[in-house]
Length: 435
Length: 194
Image (cartoon, rainbow over all chains, first blue to last red; front, side, top):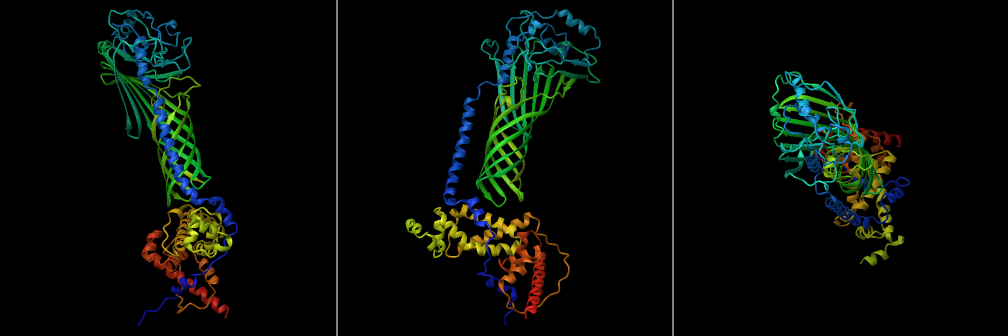
C-alpha cells in the first residue's frame, strides 16, 4: 500500500511553465547595469586587474627608487654632532640644566637657522655651578617654564626647549681641550657643508609592533649626544612639573657628560580606522570617499651614562581619501578588491611629553597639548577584503602601501612615522556604506 | 561555428536557438543574443522571484541584479545540457531572493505562532496557477519562504534550517502552518467559485 501523496507535491509540476510579466523597465535597468558586451567585459576585467597590479608594482618600485637613501633622523644627529658643540667639564649640572645649555646662549648663536661651524663661547662654568650651589639638597626642576623667545631667523618650525630657550636637536661632547661652545638650533639640513668627524653606529629597524607599524632609528655616537626634546618645532609653551619624591641627593658626576650618548627614535603608526561611502559606477568599478583616523606615536630617547631623556609625541590625523575601487572577486557577501588613490590628512589633536630620568628614576616631566598643525598628501594602493554583513553595509580590512609626500608649504621639523618612513605599509579597518 | 551563430542571431531566429547556442551568443557579446536570453527567462524568473518576494519593486531590483550577475559570470558557467542554464538562473534568483529577505529582516521565524486549524485536503483542486501563486504570495514571509524551499526547491527541513539559520523543528512547523493556511485559502476559493 503506497503512502498518501500530499497535495503540495503537485505544485512544482503545476508551476513548471508558469510565467509572470516582467516588471516594467527591467531590461533597461539590466542594460544600464550590464551592457551588451558583458562577455567581453569579463575578459576585459582580467586585463583591468592585471593592469591594476602592474600599476601597483610600478608605484611601489618608483617610491623605493626615489626614496632618499639616508634616514633623516640620522642626518640630524650628524649635523648636531658637528655643530652643536658645548662646553665640557660641566658635569655639575642637572639634566634639565644640561638641556638648557644645549640651547643657544645668545641670540647671535641662534640667529642662523642653518648650522654654524663657528664655535661660540659658552657661559662660564662657574655660573652653572652656582645654580647647583643654590640648591644644596639637589636639583629640582622649575615649576613652570615657557618658551617665549624666538630668535631672529628661526623658522616657525624651529626647535624649542623646556627651559625656555630655543634648543637644538643635537648636542655634542668634545674632548676637554676643545673650546667651550654653545649650541645652535638645528633643523634637518643638508650635510654637505659639514663632514662628519665621528663614526656613528646606525641601525634602522622596521616592522610590525603591537597594534601598528614601527620605524626605529638608533644612533650611537662616541662622543656625541642628541638632544631629544626638539622633536616638535613650534610649541609655544610647555608646562613642567616636578615629581614628588624627587631626588634628595644629586651626584652630578652620574650625568656622565663625557660618556657616549645613544639616541633611539621610534616611530609607530597605528592601524587606520575608516568610515566611507562607496559608489559603484560599473559592475567592477567604484569610487570611495570618507574619513580615516590614524594615530602616530614617536619616542625620542637619549641615554648618556645614567641620564635618560625621553620625548614622546602622539599625533592624531584625520584623512579624507578618494579611492578608485576595482572589485576583483565577489562571493556572496565577501568581496576582494583593489583600491588606489590620494588621501589628504591633517592633524586634529596632538600631544607631547618630555621626561628625564636619572638611574631610572623620574626626576622631571613636561607635557604639551598644543595642536601641532600638519597636513600632508599621500598616494595609496590597497588590497582589501570586505564583508557585507547587511544589505549595503560592509566592514573591511585593507592592508596597503602608501607614500606620504613631504610637507612643502608650511615648514616644519615635525618628525613622525610619515616623515621618517614616507613609503610604508599600513592597515586600514573600517565600515563602508555601499551605494 | 561562431559565424554561423552570429548569422542566426537575428531576432527572428533567436526564439529557435537552443540553450547552448544562446549561451554562446551571449558569451560572444552579441547584444541581440543577450536580449533573447533575457526574454527567454525573464517570465519564469519573475514568477519564481515573486513567490519569494511579493513586492513588485523589490522583484525588479532583484531580477536586475540577477541578470547583471548572470551576464557577468556566464563566461565561467559550465553548460551541462539543455535546461542547465534555466536551472542555473533559477538558483541565482532563489539565492538573491533569500538574500533580499535576509537583508530586509523579513525572515523572522517565531515558534509561538497562533494555532492554525489543520485543513485536510486530499488533492489539489482545479485552481488556476496564477491564483495559487497569489495565494502563496499572500502567506506571511516566514511561512512563504519555508514553503517555497520545501515544496519548490525540494529542500529537507534540515537543509532549510541550515540555510535560514533556524531549528529544524521550526522549519517543519512553519511549513505545516503554511500548508494549512494555503489549504484554507484554496478551499475558500473553491467554495466561492463553485
